[in-house]
Image (cartoon, rainbow, N blue to C red):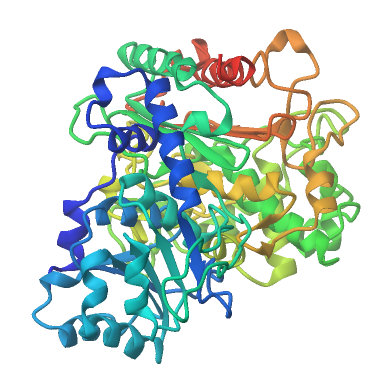
Length: 610
């Protein structure tokens, strides 16, 4: 059997999703503008839609739910567009791909699937005539969920009369058909058609099942009423930033109306050009952690009635009760109005006995590849420093990392779970976020992670998969204000859920009123909500961009990251970069890369299909 690893390597994802989509529409893609290519895609998609029918879905296995419990494999037996189909499947969750025709026997293939509870079988016309394949499908159906995707003439449906597993039949055999049907499986596209002819005693005219769209769809700008040509200035902005060494590379992600219309990687991990950026790359999110991890848990615990925004720090943290932090309210921390100092440069106070270059029982906290903190340093030194720090500006807005250090302690006290494990289990895994999480080097190779700073003042090494923020690193890589890593697609999933009012993939993560409470402007002195940043009330600041609506909420990160959600435009915009490589240059912010790219998106929306 062709191994999973080799198969995935052979079909490595393209760095630009929508360019890949366009390329497969026309072999002469280079001869046409992106807009013409996009229209060709949309026209083919309409034909695919009219000839795609979902059958045998009585048990509502399609779309797939409960992704955190799903172990999914896909099998093809010579289907021409299997790499395209499998690439789209892997946008939603990890799906292991098997080339069935490379197996020594059908039994060997079955053995290879033993660890999977869901199998997706891709069939083309010729394969429906094989009794062995029909038997393979029925045998697997007895022990696991099976979903069959059939491409070709409907007459071949008669060969599948004995199959009770869900069948997605598409009469067209094109790359667009492969993408379309893959997305039906996960709810990125809704099934709605019925058979328009009778093909067998089972598959009669009028038969078919409908589903609803529950997850992101991956498509072209024209599918959302946008001219792809109007997004081309994004390339110029990013290429200019790279040439100025503002950042070695980045990934841009745009979802409009629940449709991913732009997802493109630029540049390289470093200026050495060794590793081209991929859309699947993982970035240090820096302060985007404040919202994507800590605030998510605060929202959940608040909704459950376990945490009150009006309660005080002292009501949750015993050690704070005899300090000036005792009567600070949770809402003050969440809006950066607690009077806390902006940050404490913890690493500047280290003594030689506080760290080691080797791992040991005495030095168990990994701060970087070759840097370890002594046992108990956070509790013995860092935490007392924060508890005893002065309060100078209570009631005023002063952005402070300390606020989310405190919030981590509070939510862990309330939930009795570490922050990183809580958000992984409650949000990232169920949503299908494959890369999101803390401590990425425990799960991923460093080649998939964009390096940040070449640290020449603290850790004395390149930070590759270890959090850039010094305090978060000294806390073991997990903190309320920094430490989260993720790909752009993962953040897109998370914030599409928020834009949806708390639902995604058929599951409810928050009530709409909870989302509204946290994302609305709550401060009386700034534009901020609880955790979330918002459009600046001073329109001359053009923050986060010149054209963002007053409803827009999101956050930025020090490493050159951001997400912004605009309910008015039904927009999720994400830009991830490692602009601090190899050192903390200010150029990225000086030339306003994030805001200018966002402006291009708004301008393209405004122009529509003109």
